[in-house]
Length: 129
Image (cartoon, rainbow, N blue to C red; front, side):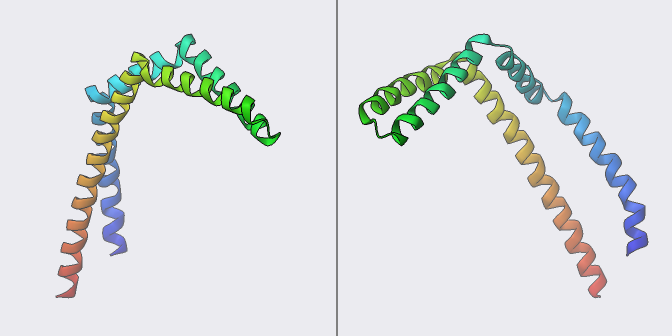
């Protein structure tokens, strides 16, 4: 079995490399990568995320020091910032692209797992005879 495994390993690695290259060139993956760059280079989104982090720290401090009115005010401001982020068209496009890319990868993993299971079951059945 170990000798057979050593023979199959290079073949499996070669096929895996081919699949990775195919996935890298898939339009859905490429679209996600483009959107990832757009988001990373968007100074407006970067500032919005920084503002959200700042408000989160302020909210935590006000809650810690038992300042409920200040905490409520900051929580409202934080909700508004989060709404802006969620409603931003670039963020929506990024999330859609991420969702689509994730679907491709999850489906690929399921297909591979099913094939591996089928081969493993066939080998187990053959060795029991």
